[in-house]
Length: 114
Image: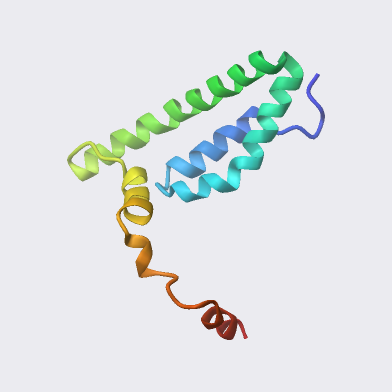
């Protein structure tokens, strides 16, 4: 039986929705504890391998249910198949766009907190 405090699988769906719909992939990091909780609850209920596969299926299902309409809307409005999620990661992590922000020394941030 699932512990009373375990997160519901629907919460995992909300996490996928909150990540995919606005196109901001960095928020996914905030939902890592939720994903771990869902996986732990499923593994406690079903066993290690079966629980892991159930969690994986849940993530893929939510990703398809939410990702397909998001991709369709993006393709309609952008006029081409594109992934704003990948574009954000590519710009900030791969393409060097991260150099635009956060280049001041730590003392700059410490002084501006007050």
